[in-house]
Image (cartoon, rainbow over all chains, first blue to last red; front, side):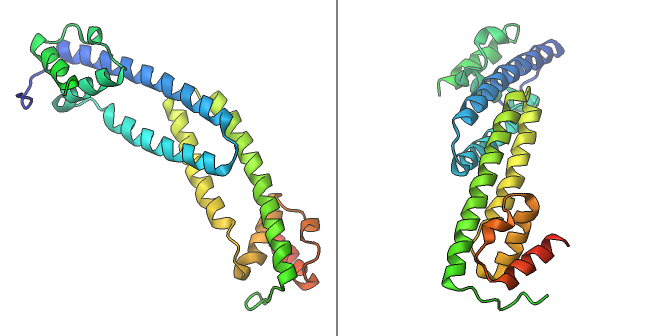
Length: 108
Length: 108
């Protein structure tokens, strides 16, 4: 699969920005709810430090994932679809070849 | 103030262990409640990462503070009294000279 040098029109970049923001909002909402639920059940500092470790990992992953860089967008969208934060319908309007590549990556 | 080479009898070490455990329990309970309260009010990931930073700092501080080492106990007890996690009554039974040193340090 040829992934280097993929060009994104301005319209596609706009669609991609909206899709990324949508996924970010969905994942944020779910994470905040998960943290609220977990926090209520914490009974001691050992469990609190486990939550701290969880947040360290999630922060590292999310801060790395939601960066708008055309060169990595195909991979990021495939990951977000796999994780359930995006549906293919959120990517409507992108060049069909890009959508095909994204779907192919989600199956790997 | 002479703080090096302070000797702790076995009875004093037992009292110190109990006092340290008492302070740890009090501070843990307060921290868990604070985290529960803060978590309920978090509205976005920026605020969640601020909580993560807060936990990083508290974890570092608490893990360093609650270590049973006779050489640093006078300082640790002075700190715990200053922070409100111990009262002087929790240190009853320690050599009066140690109690005097702890009180003096809390006033520095």
